[in-house]
Image (cartoon, rainbow, N blue to C red; front, side, top):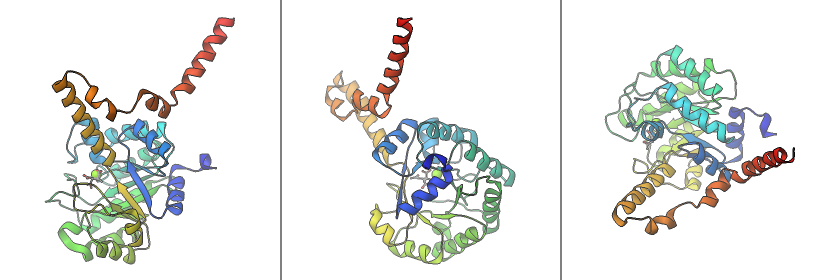
Amino acid sequence: MSAILSPGARFRKALEENKPLQIVGTINAYAAMMAERIGHQAIYLSGGGVANASYGLPDLGMTSLNDVVEDVRRITSASSVPLLVDIDTGWGGAFNIARTIQQMEKAGAAAVHIEDQVAQKRCGHRPNKEIVSEAEMVDRIKAAVDARTDENFFIMARTDAFAQEGLEAAIERAQACVAAGADGIFAEAIKTEEHYRAFAEALDVPILANITEFGQTELWNREQLGEWGAAMVLYPLSAFRAMNKAAETVYKSILEEGDQKKVVDMMQTRMDLYDYLNYHDFEQKLDALFAEGKNK
Ligand SMILES: C[C@](O)(C(=O)O)[C@H](CC(=O)O)C(=O)O
Ligand SMILES: [Mg+2]
């Protein structure tokens, strides 16, 4: 059944079936395969993650559509779990945003979020963010919605307005985005039960809670967030941060100890790696091909 649904339709189905839907960041194709096998119903490609991991850059709007779409293709080729993609500000004016949406759809993404920061953007949990006018943000949403070819492709508006303009202004902006066709709202860097409830009560589209570590938000549990009205809970960089810490520990240990004995227990084994990759299926096919060759 799910094979015939478009990625966007699969994302919407996952939203229906999971209240709230947990969406985990998968920094690369293999991470997506692990998340899928473990049972996650939705995965995420973080804009900050592409900048940091694929290009060694900070999350300051320096990566382009092509940089992100390449990572989208790699992930959607390896996993059929619906993928939400961070398209930052959409990379330009209306025509650029339209192209971004078309490229994302073609690359197999299920959903995107587009934000109202200026092009020279910052991480949503850092100070001194600047946002565009409500009218400009509404135009971004209209351009995105108008450009999709699959009506199920899910277009989420992210507003960073809370930090400068407060709760009421942020909610008003979100309402304007919904009126312009946004399918969901990502309320960036809101912090409390009261904030989540206020967004959920004011809007009748799914609300995303961004539970990113070391930011503005407490690490609320999905049950609490669900009660407060969040339909989606995002963990954009959780596994990536853990992978980085693990790699740091291993690099240090190899240098300090002269071998990796102290850290081998924290490594995924070769067998587990091969299992996630379905390595043995490939090997069997190869053996069968060789056997056929030998029998000739
Ligand atoms: C969700 C986010 O946009 C991302 O790029 O992953 C970041 C996450 C983070 O920096 O922790 C954001 O919240 O701006
Ligand atoms: Mg981002």
